[in-house]
Image (cartoon, rainbow, N blue to C red; front, side, top):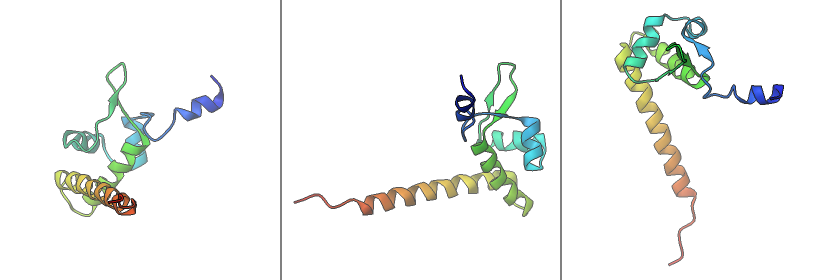
Amino acid sequence: MTANDSFGRLDDDYPAYTMGRATEMLGTTHGFLRAIGEARLITPLRSEGGHRRYSRYQLRIAARARGLVDQGTPIDAACRIVILEDQLEEAQRINAEHHQRPDPPT
């Protein structure tokens, strides 16, 4: 395996960050990460030893929820808002793709 191959594994979905590192990066607590996991906003992967591991993508989602919580939104509501925002964005993307397709000949 070359160095370039190793870096390819560090994509947005690779669970590279421990809970400790994730809390440092987000400026939050272990309890916050556990709470958003319990609310099913993110589901960290587990190492062979059972430790939580987070991807960059999951940390971006957690940061969005943290921003809402910092503004006074309860954690459960913040998680639901982030989920609904993502669903809306996906629906808008699908709708835009649908409108870009040419109509089939009749």
